[in-house]
Image (cartoon, rainbow, N blue to C red; front, top):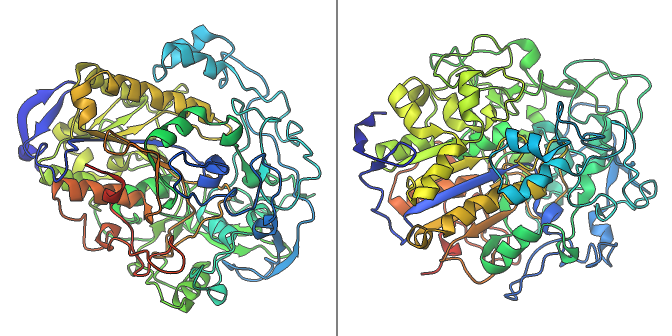
Length: 619
């Protein structure tokens, strides 16, 4: 893409104005997208009720739990089962008996505070020296919440941890909201199994046939993966280091997540917003910004075959129950999903084709698609990463960034810790998330120094821009590892505080605030259980529900939207607002807006379909 589409005038933070920045279909001239980490909708909003009176689909409204977090009259709807994973991989393996009690959750996070190996920090001063993403009074959050328990032990902070009934359980007050907790598995083939989607179980109310009832079983049988290693011996429900961590939820009715609850009460949320893929951070950021998955290449745009140990094989090793043969390599994995002879692919393909309305895989022949997390092909200075084995080569796939450049609409990715990362990518103190930045994968952006420096910056640049009251038309904001809310390595209370700083600074400028919409979400559910409907869109997803809060003068009222949407919906909103084309002829932003008028108001009758979120706003 050429930089000629951008006008020469520059605004604060060195982001040139786009000549079409003000040519919008709505009064919204600025969009800010803030992306935290790894929480499902039910995990956070399990007991939420809207002051507007709008209905909310969650554990409380479904009767799965009561407002105090204890089991409700319909608790059995969320019952979790064991399964038989001794044959070939299946997205819906044969179920055995239900768990009488859940496998005890394992502790997550540091045992004690330390200034040399945070988080958490031992002192406020050390936290202040390391972090610039929180308001001063919130720095204390970086010093609290150590577990007090040895790594790998049962989390005895949880009430009745050895006798939890087979379903969702409340973390608090045993594990305080402001404390570190466990991180469940969040990988592609594991997620597919946790969803337990069976086309023969499809109904009008649940046309995907997903039961969402194998979450703990997947956690304790394979967890975050094998990397091709043999199953450890002895092997117990604690070996993978998770237990039933996936079934935990917070209780907003009892004071958990206070800031985001207040935003939900005043503005708008969507209780039908989803992670776009079944995998983790990498896949879900990629799908959200490309509207498509990325594939392995020779770095010059030609598809080729990745190393054998990086190709996924979720078939169980001999003599094991669901211990995968090759679960990628160091966090990543590729699958040639157009070829149903490839391990794992046949089961997904069979499920999609057996649905009452069959769903296309959207996989190109000969392409090995990345399903989890590998580093992008470029370092921050635009040089190719040839040192790291766990790197997807530079990609030619277009993104929403290319659409914005071609449309002369200014944008920037603000990644916390970017400046330090550019100077020293291997620094031990780096908090920057390189797998989160979609543009860092792209040859078209990373090899053009002018554009690269124009569209990627640090959150420090965002704060400068906010203080001056000037922003690019579109701002994508990613907190670093301390502030992103990722379980075990961060806390959601910190992500709330990170977001609060941005909104506080924004609202100091009435004119800017009057024409801005802030989309607050997370990359994916993080492996946490969710009870919502999941719409099959293609081989990659959709996945479970995640939170979306939209803060704007045009979303006031505590409204709860039920529009079916995922991360690509934000791209669709941007395209609709600025009159831009779709990313490519393959990308999900070509899907229609949903029609939801059937027996289940959460299910599109014209699917596959995802919304553009314009219905969340009023003028």
